[in-house]
Length: 182
Image 1 (cartoon, rainbow, N blue to C red):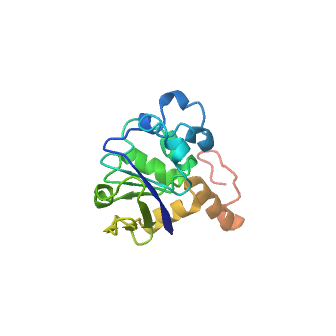
Image 2: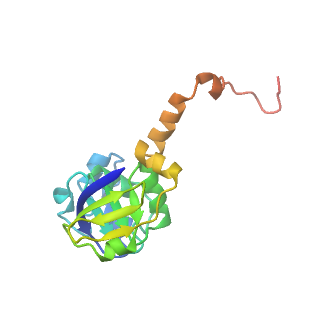
Image 3: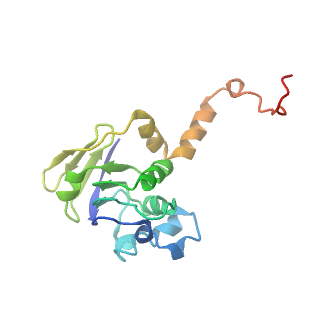
């Protein structure tokens, strides 16, 4: 899976309140959230970002509250990938769960400028700055997490697995009371 887009660059410690301010948490609709994405740090972001563009940031991206709204807002805005020097653990997990590709690569952050054209090969873990000519090795995804991202997140991945599993292999769905064996 190779992604390409322009870089929108941010600094260190971009927290979830900056990614999607709390006053907009009345919806889980990614399209509605997208209108306010990154408003706390760049009020023009939502109007400027194009489908497939990248957010490039420093250390501890997605710190703060554990809200799933933050990666949903980024995905709804059309962000193709977030590249950061490091991610807050819960943001990392939430991003994978909603199918938002994220890549850890401090070198790509330090060598990127706003508007640079980047490409990311998620299978190889390679980031290329096509504007400046740099190529950087990022942490690669384990196959299972790559499959989750390619499916669009945990829910679509699980649905596809259930749909591809024969009904007989899933059991009959009946529930027996505790302690009963027959």
